[in-house]
Image (spheres, rainbow, N blue to C red):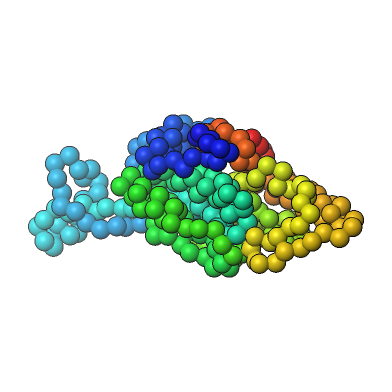
Length: 299
């Protein structure tokens, strides 16, 4: 991704699709989630859930012929089962006001990273669902499955503009049957106003299957301004004497609690700053789905 006058260029759908194609994607349905480093089995497996009947054709596996139906009708039908060779991934994207800081570069990175991840999953035959957290609400996309859904996924993410507040813990509560997802990926700055949020207690039940992608502006956690505004409200604060040091201390405490929680829960964390190279950021993020690395990484 190139920069012009300090701004990051917006990549087109085809450019993001091409970028995603560089990354092999390892994911399986949760009952048989692929372990890190395992060679992908490209053969379809017969699922456990009965899906329906199709007429028998030469070459069909006769073990799947429903003989009782043949006895009743004289016609050969083959049982079809749900194909469990594809996995399911949930992308939870923070679209709160803090993601739109300054020139909106942080939000551009976030939605384009989500798009690359979603495209890579589609290219490898997996199902993708996107959840947008915005204005204290949660908006779920329809399931995207198949490469012909790429344009819809791109449009769904591109149409959103960051505003208001976001509560990622509500997203966790709203996800139906989280065990059905091979991975649940959160893309956010993870800036909450509580120590409870910093401790990531809302992720306890998902720690084994979730990944965190944190996107920050350079020096975002450093207090340098005489005034500071809350991007998720209209409030503006003027620092009194000595107040800046206290505020910085609280930011440091929050950051310490966040990283301690990541280590305690054992969740995968990719720490990114928008001053870096976007393609390098994609490579670092996608390593979570190709090499199985779970240690915090930064670029």
